[in-house]
Image 1 (tube, rainbow, N blue to C red):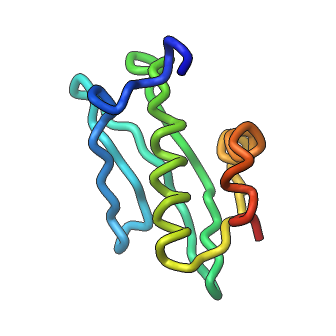
Image 2 (cartoon, helix red, strand yellow):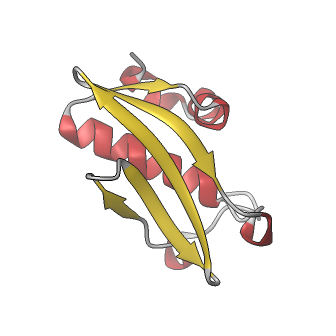
Length: 100
């Protein structure tokens, strides 16, 4: 695991708000989130945002992983419309089967 990636013990707690179509976490008082749309069994990840003051800790990757795990558990396919999510999936081929 790279030094920038959180270990399981210090990984942020990520909350899913299905009504808002958002996965979010708060770290050191700063909120980070991933937004998505869901249509016809496809989760389209539209935006991932982590403020600079908590950047470099692997938080965006944790948000993407949480969204992908949710998609897998829900039987959804994923469209990585967000460039960060698309790159993350390319670096983690174990999630390639989810791509629509």
